[in-house]
Image (cartoon, rainbow, N blue to C red; front, side, top):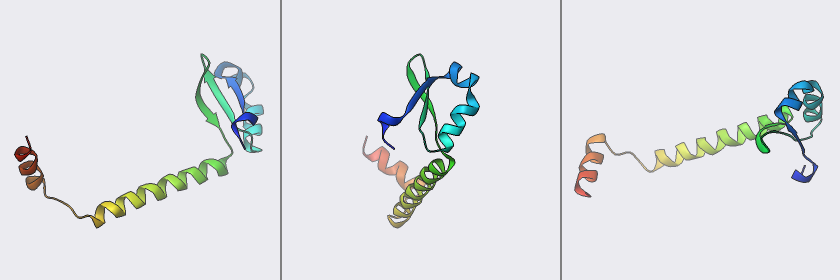
Length: 86
């Protein structure tokens, strides 16, 4: 769903009608909560949030694997290199 189909509602209004906005989000609508005109949070369907959580987990797992492949440097060696480069 693109941003043009999203709903923006201020936090106070959302609080008063939260079940309505939760239902809209569960049906696939993006509901942005605003405070003083700025987006501060979003309600999205749980499967959307779970998808992005899995994407983030996969991203960090790849970063860890890349770091492990490049090897490590001992703390002492890192200090020596930092001191040398001053």
